[in-house]
Length: 123
Ligand SMILES: [Cu+2]
Image 1 (cartoon, rainbow, N blue to C red):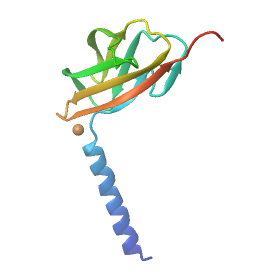
Image 2 (spheres, protein in one colour):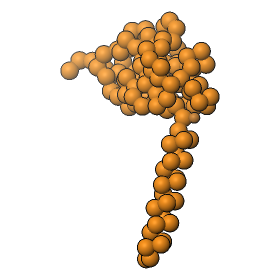
Image 3 (cartoon, rainbow, N blue to C red):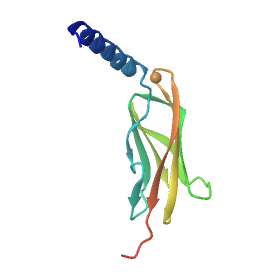
């Protein structure tokens, strides 16, 4: 393996890394509850911090129970440039999905689904 080959290889790696950063859109960086979390009590809200700032007017977070009913209440709230939250009704044990779609400040729309479970009580 020549030095020239290594130099070229690391250059391409560097280009790929930089390009990936430039292409990054708004995805959940941190969510509460976290994806896959198992909780003992109903959370009062779902909060998602994204990897970029988002436009609340063109973003939504819909939390549904296993029957597909919306269990959120009130309007989506913006806690920070990159953080949105929605209040929840009191939830029973079960599995819930968080459907999110956001317009990031770089004008890209992204969406996805997170899940959390509330365990049946009685330890
Ligand atoms: Cu983007």
